[in-house]
Length: 89
Image: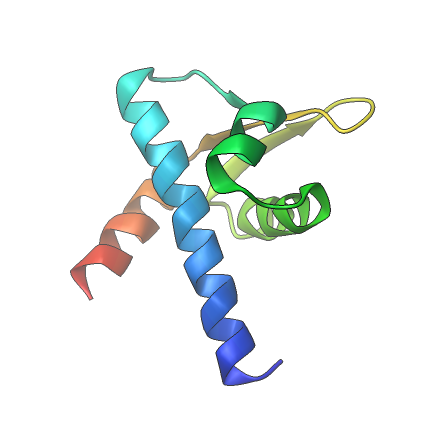
């Protein structure tokens, strides 16, 4: 992976975390479903799911996958801290 691709990934991760953070602040504990995330992020399903799985592995989000293409995601306290640290840089 080159530097440009890595930068793009970081921007996508931050964009996802920002949306989950905003929703968490508005409705604490309420997960965001796959349809809403796809609309808000304007991202292909496979690309979105790949990014979400990475964020889950890092401990930044909770991800619940269901049958078909459905899932729900929440930002974790670690994800909030990471996002706040990114914004300080």
